[in-house]
Length: 584
Ligand SMILES: *[C@@H]1O[C@H](CO)[C@@H](O)[C@H](O)[C@H]1NC(C)=O
Ligand SMILES: *[C@@H]1O[C@H](CO)[C@@H](O)[C@H](O)[C@H]1NC(C)=O
Ligand SMILES: *[C@@H]1O[C@H](CO)[C@@H](O)[C@H](O)[C@H]1NC(C)=O
Ligand SMILES: *[C@@H]1O[C@H](CO)[C@@H](O)[C@H](O)[C@H]1NC(C)=O
Ligand SMILES: *[C@@H]1O[C@H](CO)[C@@H](O)[C@H](O)[C@H]1NC(C)=O
Image (cartoon, rainbow, N blue to C red):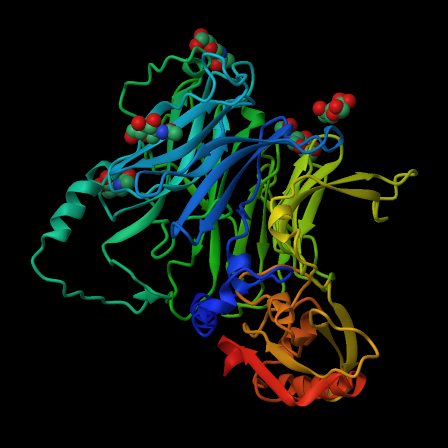
């Protein structure tokens, strides 16, 4: 869901309050308290699924700095919560990003220190205090000015399983030049003497970023030996070789870096693990970027030796999408590389069309659509370890762990994202369509301390009849201190979401957080009118050419319903709030 202009909205919300309102008051969660809560990123799981790493950032209003900390987390829910600090950013001096696992013992990350951008690693198995504990070690330097991001790593399979590996990442480079030439071209560009720009196509700006028409984002690969890691002595002094498998075919992204869900790598197990499959998705390069949402998936295979990637520098590239579809996302290989899967919208140009799950068999070169008759729209795919099932996730990211367990990030109206383990037992008798018995165990509690002084409302759902007699859902969050039956009257904050395809959900937000208003003494109502997601595709598309019609009628009917059901709400003090579509 594109949530338009939300950061701006947050800024104006904060500046409208006086400093006294922002001060920490006992028993109240103020906007400032909320913004200072730790913000955990997704957990990156080790190859064996026993450990995870997560980047947690914390903003301090005193120092006006944000510090990122990398934690090592045990993913064994029965042995209790256990996390250990591995790395911490130093404002203006050192920052890290994109943590990955190189092996079950070693993590690596992008280290930005001044102008140097390198890949560094640490042995996280070493006991605290031992000789090797937490000593950062250098692996390779990224070419200067190439802005690497979205690391993915695959260690070589088969007999020499820890011998070497392939690193993939997205970089911003000059079209038609090697990645090593980026810095020189950047300097020439900076000193070109004027700042006029000429575009001869329409895709020139996205949100707040102007595109440099001479630069593109490309996926690069490099390989290195892991034997050196084990011995804690870096012999990788040779200059790394960076290889862009899709360069010759002009498959690159004009505006955004590739994210980790926009490309994937897998070994071809039918070729003794010597062939590497690489898949990417990009906007259709033959259509006008500004007016089309169609994306295509491309696949290529590269021969390798145990230590290096071999050409050809111009490998065969195959387009595997049917061709006429809309948007494509979440490219994921099955564990043994036999299938490639992705999420696909049917309609070019539509942003809220339902996502279907597609798999492509590399062996038979055939496509299969899995969820044609399922009226819901998943936004993430996770393969089971055995490659026989796919888990579909709506909201947040998930990872499969050994022993029928899924690692999930879940937030609610009362807390930001925490990690949980969902363990499930398949029903006896092998009925694959039955929902397995499952159990959810909380693993992390990053915000426990920051929320221990307050009591937030979990919200109540209500349903009413909206436009065309449709059933419409809304949330009601009573104000802090509300007591049923008392005569006190309370003001109402009526929140309207943007998108317009999106929804108020049982989730946490630092942009529009219903409890923040409820904490200040407002009844909060947040309705999911026509156009909202999560209620089937017909409800979403009913907003087409009807922006001011049914959604408006739903909102008015919802307000009437709430006012009648809750005489405690003061009809003289009602405020509507929203941004983007919800603010117009
Ligand atoms: C998890 O921890 C429990 C208790 O410490 C232990 O018995 C079990 O073997 C562990 N499981 C895994 C997968 O490590
Ligand atoms: C980051 O890189 C710098 C050199 O560029 C090095 O001195 C420092 O130890 C590294 N830190 C970590 C945590 O990797
Ligand atoms: C891409 O291909 C062009 C033309 O063959 C070549 O000059 C350039 O160095 C290549 N760039 C990368 C990043 O591989
Ligand atoms: C495994 O590594 C050894 C030592 O580098 C090498 O001689 C051998 O050919 C490799 N085997 C395979 C199957 O790649
Ligand atoms: C890959 O996994 C699938 C699903 O488990 C299986 O059907 C297929 O035979 C496997 N292929 C190889 C080459 O191991």
